Image 1 (tube, helix red, strand yellow):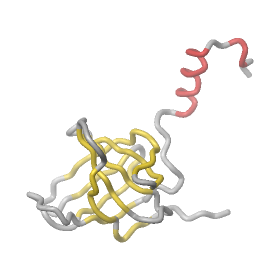
Image 2 (spheres, helix red, strand yellow):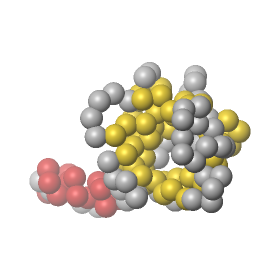
Image 3 (cartoon, helix red, strand yellow):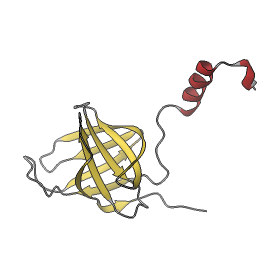
Image 4 (spheres, rainbow, N blue to C red):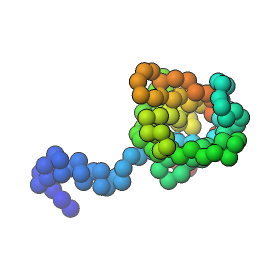
Length: 131
């Protein structure tokens, strides 16, 4: 075991990142859900979202697929959840509320400004607590 006093702050941070393996997801992050945009969208219809190892895949009715990577745990409009970044559009972020949040909401953010309401998650599949 490495004594805490033998490492400087930078080394401690590097060790913590190595041990954690990057951004950590909430234990209540949904495994899957559907979302139907209520705003005008060039690709309308119900979208299927599925959790992957370190992010989500969004499948659109047209067959197009969007990939998102986990950025961090966060809070948006009073809800706990995770922020993910669109791989194909790195300045576009989505907030996914935890499965146990009071409101199953999605928000989006791009470049500047506030978080914008995106819609409500439906058909949420979530981890089951065993304790």
